[in-house]
Image (tube, rainbow, N blue to C red; front, top):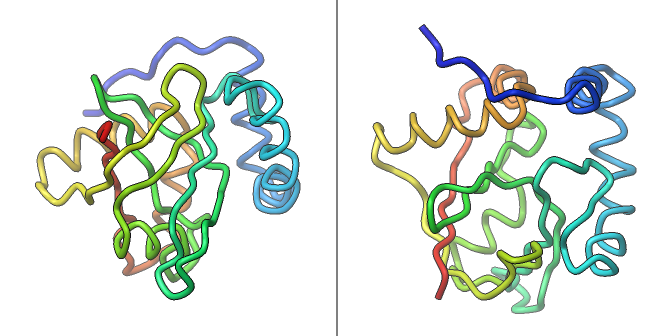
Length: 163
């Protein structure tokens, strides 16, 4: 039996329902990644196009190029750390930001009071991963859809701890 979800406002329920439609999927894949970087920068990482869902700007160092790469992402708070979900919208391969942080685990985060420098590590312990995945699903049930789309690929979960 799954744990009950957190209490969501009507707005959050409508936003989640929309995000799981074809139009919503298109929006979160193509429009939000263009809107969110300037919006998050202007607001100091406090507000994104999917507010009130927690979103950040993650800056990694390119695995091949060594250049800074910045990506807006949802995250889940877990005590003193942040959890990232490398879903890649359910596509077959892992996202580029995941490859970058596995090669260079020191990252910068712009996420309001959680902004700063962090060190990334993949959550590999099965029990810890199950707990983190439950938190991710609680944030956005669409991650379950992505898990189905991903097929045989296990969606990596990454823990960020302050450096």
